[in-house]
Image (cartoon, rainbow, N blue to C red; front, side, top):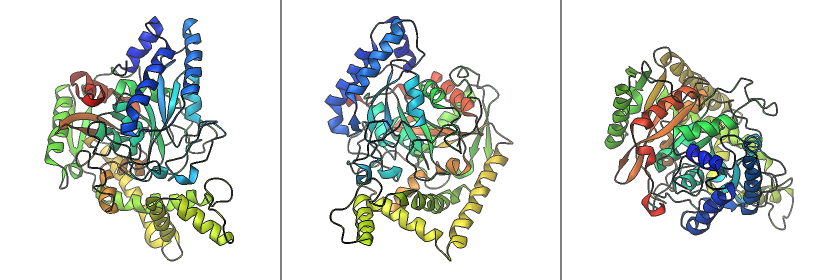
Length: 484
């Protein structure tokens, strides 16, 4: 059952070939048997899952429910889930039990989905490899000596290894897409404001966006549709009707104008990855799309811009973790200053402390204009590049990552190299655009991903293009043999 699509699982549940309880027990059994090697789950909510499965079965027995009723999923461990630990991969929140549900958790619960548990992530979503987690690194099921990407490494590993059919994730600078690319999955980051951030623990508020990782665009469309929608509790959530993503999957690719940015195929890209992405472009052209060379001249500035803006927002968002109100508190503080220093020093890991310090620096008196203000200006230039490009094309295609998954521990001592893992993904976050990664090849037994970027609120077109590509190829059906 763990290799079937969401549509196939839903059909099996509707026909009562199996029950939601049986399906849930199947995945719980795989987690118990296999996750010790992968470390994708931080918390398994077996009792809650079986209760939700029983409720789903009751609805299905009455002929009620929707396309997701009774289907299990995993949540990235920064979405608040009432009564369940929400730790964000950090010692700081290791003892935090969420008193409420995030908006997307509410929506997916209402759709009848079954929560298997919370999955691992880089601490406070800061990282590109899921190695900064307080709970240890998650491993890539295609090669357990390698990383699954980050910060959504737990989400993608759980899905790629068949420990969940689908998972929620978040993307601040590429965490959904980069992780999906390194594990052979389809991952979509919707337009900023399409999905509510209420109940999602903040890293960088103007960049964070919830999304989904799944085996295919068709699976991702079903879940994204259920988790999208206006939420008045999030002031950045856009009041706009949700498109029928699943219903639009079969729109033809013929006539689609696909932009190929010169900057994304320049120095630094592994030649084999480039060949795989170019083959994906050729496949779309064969399906009727038109390939159009474009330029995004300011995209090389994405990484330095991001690493001013994101740490600045993180330093503000994470100031609430002070050892007083909630979260980790040091033992026997000598005074208030000692309480603050030791609680934050012991509760936060090295990468989080590094970004807080960078953010505090760029916001400090005398440096705000020189760094933060300039970064915001460059951010606007990057957004303008996309606006001009979309006057010529409908979607933009390029690589998701420069190479395939790297070894665990290989880049942990080199933060700059680690930051460059997101060189092709960050620009979409800075501009607030929807983007997805889809598998487009294999290199030495490791997956390669291609990225599609679309206009604001054009998730349907991205999913349809990816679906058409996946109807013509089989990269998305590949499964890591050790976990089949």
